[in-house]
Image (cartoon, rainbow, N blue to C red; front, side, top):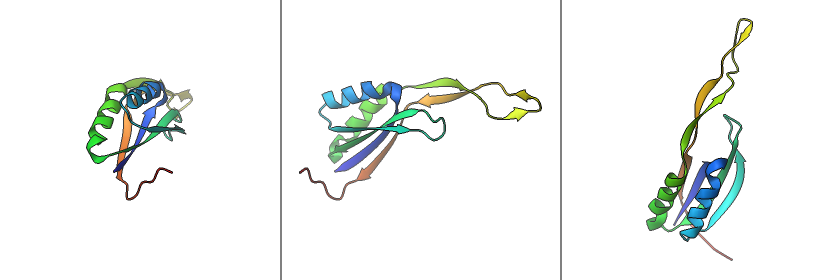
Length: 105
């Protein structure tokens, strides 16, 4: 058995959750905040059998999209603030861990 931690942008989270649950995956949803952009994320905890990991990851991949977003550059050059910079946001960060023991009480 495996435990998938999937950190997904808030804007993609509903589609990901709907697709996972309609495919039979049990999902726990946690609201989280990213450290770099301080933007809202959702972290999904998904317990799956070993042979279902790729199916779950494929669903997450299908519903998470990367895009660019302008954000203020915090550096200042002389008396002038710098121009906004574009950063890539979205997509997903996925961790897959071995589960030594699982009980549902």
